[in-house]
Length: 131
Length: 131
DNA sequence: CTCTAATGTGTCGTGTTCCGATACTTTTCT
DNA sequence: AGAAAAGTATCGGAACACGACACATTAGAG
Image (cartoon, rainbow over all chains, first blue to last red; front, top):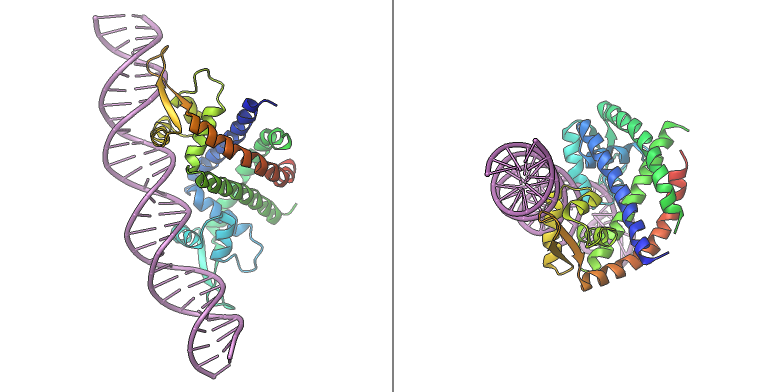
């Protein structure tokens, strides 16, 4: 493959991911959340830790520093999507849980995302499988 | 598949993409560019437009508004990676080209990215192919 | 047991990036 | 020729992530 094609492939791959991301941002905002808030809800819902993930665990999943996750939790909590609970076993830890409305809005967002991801899969498949 | 698993899958998918993105940002910064600047170089190099892509074309590839691309071009140009050239055929258009040093740094970044993307491919493949 | 180090979370100020609104230049169309 | 459209640029503002720092709690060395 020529070098030009290599660059073109890379660009298409990135642009495809960006379009998905942009679509996802819009979907979140149409439901009244920012992208980061949506991702925090998903990080909580997708965690397997009993009682909910800690701030640090969410930070890992979001690939941000812990204090960024803490700030994000502030804003998301203020909107009523999540709640904090200090761990009873380890007083340093703070566990996050979805509120009923948080659970509901994430359900709605997830429904449309599963659909869109099927479409993305079709686009990404030839890009990631080939060199 | 249980709903819990669905959420877990979604989370893993996103986190995988975020980790790649974060890795890529670091790589760019180690070469003295921001993530956005790196992506602009790639958008220019990966374009098939003779004489280089216009501001608008780059904006499309980066999935940002055109004035964002214009601002980004300012900063990237100031660092000497790209150059502007007013189109001779249409005086409204501004075409972007890589400078020699821009070409070189993108080459270096691309080399490590091709490697990393092979690794990502292995992670993404089971995620995008399965429901 | 106590005191220090390590761990987990939170606060503050800063920088980057993106956007909307707006303006300017050039081209197109009638 | 003149109005509308297209392409680019400027300016002010908002979200978010970070580093540096501070605080509380737990773990471990002695």
